[in-house]
Image (tube, rainbow, N blue to C red; front, side, top):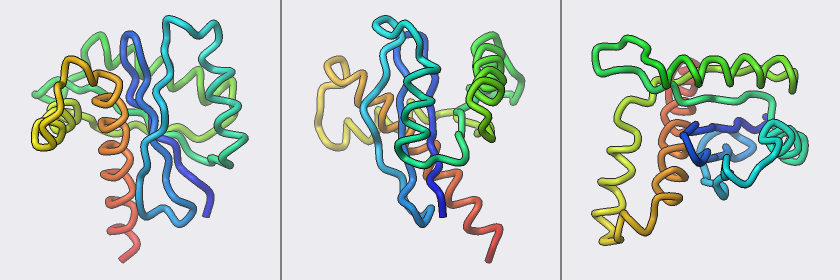
Length: 141
């Protein structure tokens, strides 16, 4: 089975996570900085090729009532660009509360959240991907 890449799209960074080859677990990857990257799509394209990714799961930040706000619309546009320019399947995953959950996880590990913003993004991407993988697995049972 080919790998799945999850992206937690943010204003300054993108958290990344990748599945194992069997599609069972999610492992975080280093974040991508939007400030330092001239061409983020090129970086993602290289990662897709290197890791043999067939699907990208993009966290969609819905409002608590399920509607789509401005940030969600930016994520949808980014997903369309990924799909067209990299020629890859892009799926959206409701990421409501993934950042809250990742911060809670860090608190439980007694880490200082202010100093670990990149880690929050990485954990968020892992949570998005793990939720996606779990749902896909339950659909096949």
